[in-house]
Image (cartoon, helix red, strand yellow):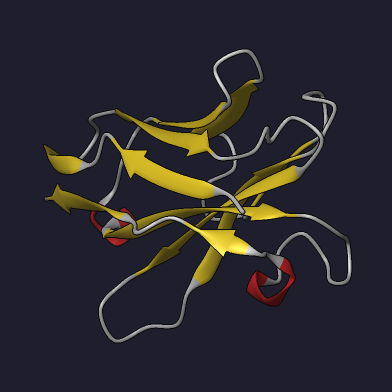
Length: 125
């Protein structure tokens, strides 16, 4: 079993930056695919970014490509999401998740086995 805890969210203005951290415990996450998703009020959870076992294979949603960067530190058992040039439409609860097996595509939330509790990101205009 893996416990995931997100942190780093907050209230910022349009154009600002935030760095989210996903700290894992209970099991090493370095052999596994990690994803970031978000859910805005009244909307379904959507894929944001993911990173494979080899850190050179990140994936991004088109809406965040060029602004967000996902990375991992296996020594710290953590994954990060650097968010730059934030926009009001980025406002959501952000979740990290771990995928043990590739039953679904990296952007499909059904394929992830454990989730954190989420961290709120609010971007004001």
